[in-house]
Amino acid sequence: MTSASLYDELTSAVHNASAITLRASLIPANALPSDSKFFVLPPTYAEVGHLASRVREDGTNQYILIESPQSWANRLEELLDRSEVGVGALSVSAAGRNLTVNELPHRVFDALLRDSELNGQPFRATELGKSLTEARAENATALLENAPGTLLFGAWDSFAGAKMGAAKWPAALSGQIMGFDALQTQKAGIRIDPMNIAKAAVTGFKAENRAEVWTIDASHAMKDTKGEPVPLKAASEVGHGHIPATLSTKGAWVSSIELRSSLSLTRLRRYHFPVKGKISAVTDSGARTYLAALGLWLMHTRLMAGLDLRAGAELDATKADFLVRTPLRDDMTLSVSADSVRQALQQALEVARAVGFEFAAPTEFTASARLEQLIHTSETLSQ
Image (cartoon, rainbow, N blue to C red):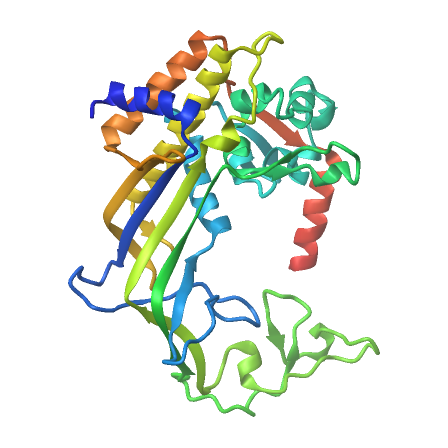
């Protein structure tokens, strides 16, 4: 399949198909495809441990979660600031840092952006801010041109409160990684102090200065509610001494690992993209094809870069299928390569511009005085 025909297939798909689906078989970096079992470290959640299905009679789980939909979305969003996307970064400058909208948890509705300004105007009072926060399904052009990640990964304007019609953009692109036939394992954690410091050797206090951690001077100690210095009970409280072995569930042996990701074309067809106030089949097609090409490029690019999820979960693909799903028809396989998907995205971008879309140049908002003060106060409390 040539790059031009890949673009043509995407153009056809946005009119008729329901989804573009990715199914990839993965293995850990230290494994071989011929291995019958793979060891992997899934994420661990406080008071829960690993997320898995119910334990079966043989002690295994049908599946265990290795990458959540939220984390997968974040890994794809990291790519949205690259030049291939064709959209200049919408960003916030605060406390010496610059964060793009693709790094903000709530995207265009994030509090950091809300509490920032452009030429002295609050974000939501600017023309750009109003166009983004007032965008709706019948007019999603502002999001397309300035923050297409919001259309792909979703967002909710929770700051609008209970107001009727508050913007809610469900995710169109989602995915997760799972391990199957998982046997969870236990790990023994132990620490040997190279100086052999005894548990009861520390007789000081918790330090008022966080950088100091602990002190033997009561005048520099952290005080309790009665104004008394807070004593240390054991060397381990300040990182010294031995820590005895403790067992905890950590990791799992699995028979296979799969990435399952999809882009809903049905959802994209719910959105309209008027140019100069006029909705047309041409502009809708151009916008949807660009979003489909962008979603496909994101999935393929992230997959080919390798999936360094965490220590013990560095994964690579051994096989990947990109499929177009159409109701009551067999799935159609897309032949996707780095060159073809990049060129398809470029062609979709050019067509979108030709039908009238004006993709944004970089725009930087700056933190308001109250936001800078909030950040400074927080940093002071953390010292």
